[in-house]
Image (cartoon, rainbow, N blue to C red; front, side):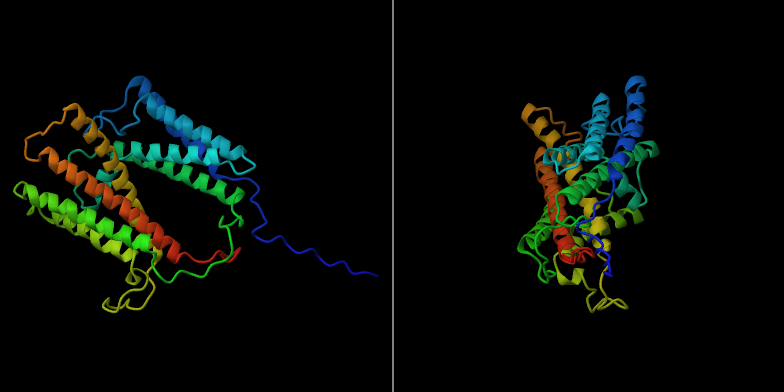
Length: 328
């Protein structure tokens, strides 16, 4: 009598999820948020300060079209049974457009962090921008899931190629990015030194102190921590924590949020500044800040954002744990 041996269970790398869930979340977001945008396009949206709108770049019916595009990409991802690079590119393009449209969220976040949102803050605009950001996050995650399921060798992590040893050194490109972020921060500070601090309320209380401290932390300490060993293990001069491993999300979350915020907000600002410069429609306001100041400050912020984001990618690749399914 022969004994039937049980067949081996499929490895995690070979197993596929029954059906992706995230594309349906994208479709649900497009329907719900799109319904709000349709209503506002038909009857008029609230006059949110400071620009009488909650979104920028894509407003009115363009915001409706953006929601429709996200829904179509979500439907395509839900129906796909093989890797579709064009669909992935379309998803990330729509995701970038959604992020650009909620660029003003950076001002809300900074205002809330320093406990001084200002007169231009409006809870309704904040909720709308947060909903927009949630849609971009869902769409990005859905495209990433599509890539992992249908392109990568491992269905859990989506990584390809042989297993690699954990990186022990920081790649050169990550260090260059980190120092570029620092350079952007210092260049922005130099632009302020150039025009002077007379009208800057340096004695405005705790909110201004919090802003200045946060400015230096996000512009100097954070990018350098992403590209040095003391951003992985607490250095010896830190009481009680010396020698312990730093939670990777403690650096990656603020780096990702601020890099995206800086790139989107000042990307829109640079585009507007370019148009105003070329057409001669630049409005100097009270004349305190000349056109040259903005051509230094805004590219500096943009460089800061890109450098911070690339350094965060390097830190993520260096500190991520091996996949439990394939060991990569």
